[in-house]
Image (cartoon, rainbow, N blue to C red; front, side):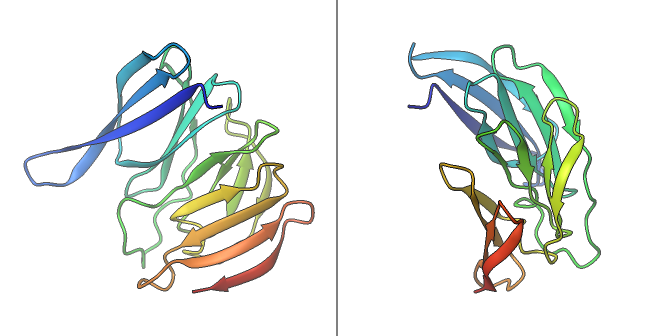
Length: 178
């Protein structure tokens, strides 16, 4: 059972554009807030907590940013390099999905295409999948055993583009398809 739940509350400025988020982490066993709210300096739309609750990753924003926070104190532990915003990008929020792999690696999607497997403490990339642009910018879903990755992207603009990867070979086994 999950010990933590992360909530990202969007805060609107006067122009109704979201320029930051608030991150709050809860200890579900104790029924108490662990920390927060912590200001995240971009519109975070993706949140993932590692298996032992020691790290919380958030991703999103117009430039596709990812920050990793301490799961107990809320201190920022790492900032994962952005791959940048492609010139033909059309969404501003769901841009950089994140999910922790069971082995502790952080999987980071992007608008640019590449899906990176990074060390969440220092951002170093251990592996990547050369996915097409806008096929892994909405969401990443992992099988419980960490052998299959499903990506959702915005390439079609009208409905999600789905691709399924085998993480033993890092090759697509289905899709991309709307």
